[in-house]
Image (cartoon, rainbow, N blue to C red; front, side):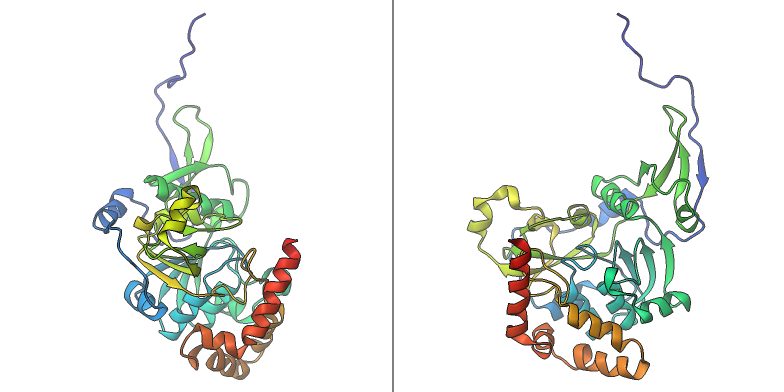
Amino acid sequence: MKQQDYGLKEERQVVYRPAGKRKLYMDPDPDAAREYFRKKSRKLVEKVTTLADAISRLVHDGDYIACGGFGTSRISTAAIHEIMRQRKKNLGFSAHAATHDFQLLVNGQCIDRCDVAYIVGLEARGLSKRARQAVENGEVELTEWTNAALSWRYRAAAMGISFIPARCMMGTDTIAYSAAVEMECPYTGKKYVALPALYPDVGMIHVHRADVYGNCQIDGPMVSDWEMARAAKRLIITTEKLISNEEIRREPHRTVIPFYLVDAVVEVPYGSYPANMPYEYYSDEEHLQEWLRAEQDPETLAQFLERNIYGVKDFWEYLNLNGGPARLAELRRQENLMKN
């Protein structure tokens, strides 16, 4: 039997057509990113620090940031609080189903541009009035994608390529408000969407366990954290618990983020509160509603922000203001009921 030739059937020129009308905020060039990664230290050194130091040293005005987790599950609340306290400005943001994290960054006036799949809504809890106003007033410029598209943009960056072909968004209005490009496959002539690689300046991921070097374990869904950790130029890890390197080495298959990707490790128990941390603690639904109610009136919101963000020295003080150990123990009990 004659072997099938799966090469090019004919001399075919690849055709690229602009499809989206919105801005591309980050350079997708893998070689430009590689120049940065080449200079990044891969030494096995201790990286434990404070949240104040990590944010001050690694997040700069104008940077593009990305937050791990998904929806109101395992988000980097503590890190975002510190960004707000340090009054970081003009940040870009990847809103890969961003709920309370987007709400916080808008209330802190920290971001001015956003690659968005899902924002404004806190899922079934309702809409953030302040986040909606910021978008409607043009305070935050948007380029739209789907959740799948943002996942694959991280994946392209993790693979070291400038784009990845896909079929998502085709035939929808979303593509018109994106920065995607349509292309023809050089093998078949079929139409695809070219999704540009996304290399954030800073990634922030809250994990279940990490050692002092930055080897991390995550329980439950990771969504795009594996890819984002490898795409980000600088990576801040907040962790529920610091564990020994010996414990990490006993189960090497559970290390989903290796040390050489990480720039800072901060132990922050309950660092995702008031969001949910799978298998650890349930979301504080009452406190999330407090945020939504406070946004109904500008004066009330200003007082609320002063009390919960700007008037506290750290995240632990914020936790104590909102129920402290007793409330956290109740949320842990609720999560265990869900788990069982």
